[in-house]
Amino acid sequence: MSVLEGIKVLDLGRYIAGPFCAALLGDYGAEVIRVDRVGGSEDRLILPVSEEGEGAQFLQVNRNKRSITLEIDKPEGQEILHELVRRSDVVIANMPPRVLEKMGLDYESLRRIRPDIVLTASSAFGTAPAVRDRVAFDGVGQAISGAVHLAGLPDHPMKAMVPVVDFATALSCALGTVMALYERKASGRGQEVGASLLQTALNFSSASLIEEAVLQVDRKATLNRAAQYAPSDIFRARDGWFITQVIGPAMFKRWARMIGKPELVDDPRFRDDLQRGQHGEELSGLMSEWCAPLTRAEALARLEEARIPAGAVNSPREVLQDPAILAADPFKAMDYPGVKRPVPIVKPPIFLSRTPASIRRRPPRAGEHTDEVLAELGCSPERIAQLREQGVV
Image (tube, rainbow, N blue to C red):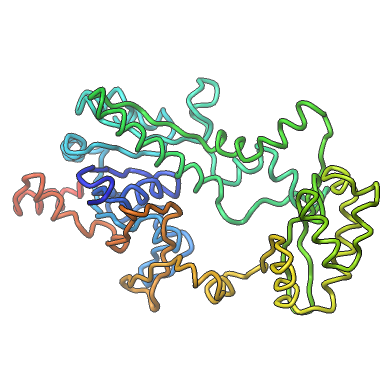
């Protein structure tokens, strides 16, 4: 039996924070119905990889779902939506509160339809009145949290090119949803689950924010070099780049022996992590000298032998070919209509020994299951045809 078997989820989410939350719930057994706009929603088209334009991001965050197309701004669409809500345990919608209210998807509206409903509604800035209706994407969260300021060059900040804030917000939403369902078993009551890009990003930056509040050090960007310990940087071997991170006195001692300079341990400039971070440029220089004549594989092997965390700076192509990554079995290959090769869906990051996740269903095409879902609601073939002719589905 799956953890969430019997739980029904209605997914009106878009992009990542909402849809990935719903996908995770589906991975652990929930039945998920995605509501698309007629013709397909806009978040299907980012990084297109299929003949019809479905995007790589869409495929990753929409496995284990069925899709119904529905125009919920039409009265007939609202009726169908309400019937879907009555049959759901969870509604997911990552939209600003004002939009939720306009569409009748705010918690007060939904609980009038089903009193024990759980609404999972992530947003950009949270629910405080001054910021509740602001919009943002992942990069905004990275930037306003201080993370982008600390990356790259002092005069050229750089954000991460993968949407870390969006995905982490989705993980928070999934955890919150499961907690709300767990609590509902005792109380019989639903509630609203919230998360925001802002709060997620601030959690990521929290150590730097606390350091600044207490010590007022006003950190600047130091490329890929950590400011609080060293050597922690990205280095170039003879045939490629790799990263290593040396933290703590025991690891620093092993690193110094590895590069043939054990005397560094007794150098007062390197007496603790903070001092090593302040002299990180020099330590990175010594590391660069050590690895320059080595191949990347040779450098990584020696670092592994010394039990120092390190890894190759892989391109996406190299990720898909890395023996260590493939040995971890992180992908589920799935066929998708109009895609020439199997799609490597990344498995969820949470492992359960007795009730594991499973990716059972490929991502749906827009409206692929409309007739099936409407029939389950009691609609006759004639009624479905009429709704289609009216542009409701």
